[in-house]
Amino acid sequence: MKKNIFGTLAVTAFAALTITSCNQSAPKVDEKSQTAASGGSDLKIAYVEVDSIMSQYEFCKEYSLILQKKSTNIQNTINQKGNNLQAAAANFQQKLQQNAYTREQAEAINANLQKQQADLQALQNRLGNEFQAETEKFNNALRDSLQHFLAKYNKDKKFALILSKAGDNILYADKGYDITNEVIAGLNKAYKPAPKKAEAAPAKEEKKK
Image (cartoon, rainbow, N blue to C red; front, top):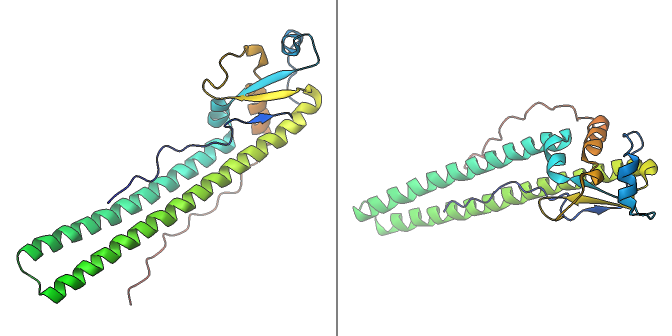
């Protein structure tokens, strides 16, 4: 009955992200790196380590905690309601075997249990969709902030291509092309956390009429 609808948080804002823009205040890449990157032509290439952005960019760290807390709360809610429903179903089966109900009573209780199960599934779907929407909102905000920063960054750097490096999607990359630390420093300098709001009181379940 209980399904783990929330697996490992997967933030995909950088997956296969290739950007042709990049700020003005970051340290300059040394002459040797620029020459190597150009390959003797006007083409300049750089890359950013995705894992480092996710672990060191303050916006990512804060939002990851928010999503993790939300996911845990949702899972706990689903688990608790699922356990209660399982206990009620087990109690019904036990009393049914003991002939504790009339036929009409048994049918009514069984119908109520089925309704609770359908309600639980609907709740699970709704909360899952809300969590997915919140994750997508984070991904979009992360992508926008990165692209906005890189557009300024590249006014001076003038890279023709900036790649995202995640895992082994790039089989080999010379460290001379790595601008991750510059990007993280610039992002964190520009980031202004939103004022913290007081946590809302848990919503009370609507009383049965």
